[in-house]
Image (tube, rainbow, N blue to C red; front, side):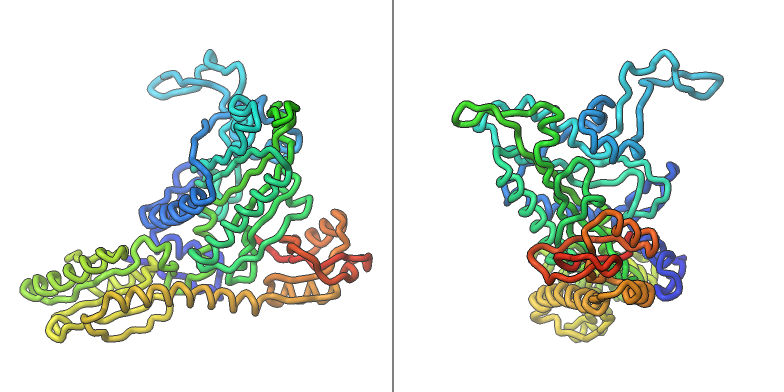
Length: 488
């Protein structure tokens, strides 16, 4: 029996967990802080992965795979990197167990000479590998991506948004010049923006992180930031210009066309299953999950309605023929022919799982050569003729995709404010949250003060020029407004 989904206005955090549960996306595993991703959640991630993978390959990248275990000494080679990840690392100290009194314990004789780190990110082992791959300018650029899992020892976790182990992709590229590396960093940020807006129907802001919010070991971190329904921001993807920091740490040089040896320039970039959390909080409602059609594991579900075996045979034949037509057009469609569940239960289940379109077919529909068509996002229902139905639903899926983006964009605009004083800033933050554009003096001290007093952080510094002004806290000069928000 399905449990009730808490209303968003009542308890947003519990609503989120209820949606994950009722949509059968994921559940907690026996290991604290980790999750089991269920078929619906995995299907959603696979569609995200496939779309992104195509975009990566269209920009010249190739997939590879690197080990999950990293020698501990590797992390100490880049000072900022080790400082940023030291507290999150899971460490392997022994290589085996031994049986003792019907149980097992760590064999003390199997202690490793050097401990291994379960990868929190792969820069170190990849750059140690690149040292062997790069000798000449002819070997550059290297444009590699890997799909993998990583482990970051988080104690306060929430399904998809922050877990100890999660799935992601991480791109790692090597270039002959600074200009090429910076261009790569910005190009991949644009890939993420395009994916977020065109596939997830999730509008995002783009910009650069402050020094305190940068990736450990980067010279610059670019990001996409999305705004959730509760007015909190979500960092949805990052692209890092690493400069020559990792090339120096791992002695990765190349001989240029003039015979001179130079250090390589680097980037890294990644998104993770956190995107599923972002999708949930951007589009879903009090009835459950809402998924943009481009990413939905099932875009259309056909639910047959019948009272006896004769009706069942007729309705299933009608529904199966329609399913075959839809599949032939590349639509991901499912015929829910389970006999042990009533139509009302099926309707509620598919609503909770966010299937964009539902087609109901009963004996009268077969007789009249029509169907009942229902949109998940608006709950709008109409009787439609079977003739010309396939092109109609294809068009409707595109309309739903576009409408979801427009709705999310309108909400973001309503939750975006421009303030000039610190008092106004705090009032807007408490009253409605959202993105707040305000002047900042550029110092880490003021940034930390605002964070400690309000729990709001600078989500990004927008690209390009902006209006000059004075910092809302100190009154010192500010070159342009930055974007503040409370965040996940």
